[in-house]
Image (cartoon, rainbow, N blue to C red):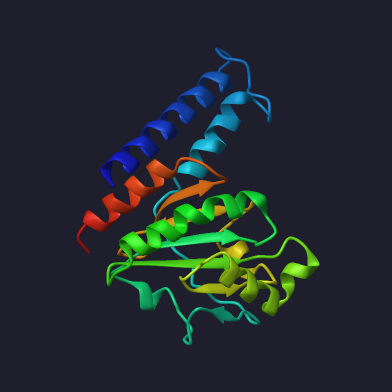
Length: 197
């Protein structure tokens, strides 16, 4: 946790220094699409600040692989991996073997996974289609449909797939967009599981 706070503080200090030097004319002002600003955005995507995770509320969502409504309060004391995905997304289906493996490996009283299914195309809005895809893809963890993208917006998601790791206190500690970095994500799961409440 201290590593992420230190990284955040260093990034902030560098940003303030560059903006200050730009303001007094030592450095030219950074354009809106500068590589530095893009690099900052990528870093923010990979190491989300420690914010309390929003609840899993939506008006019309239906759960798959569970008979109960799951709230973030129910998950306090657990490390939680949440993935925003859709079954028609090639990149999403490429991540699923890793997610399925992690669920089998780490599933316990201290670890839970939740899939939030947000449709890209009309056929992905059908609950029956999502349910059939969950079964076909071998997903055993709970999945919640989010056709109106309300949870997607609460978590400030912009792409499929996006993974969040939430610590035992209910704070977002990691955000990963797209495929890859599976070893880093799994290492983060292990680190969070090793932390005390």
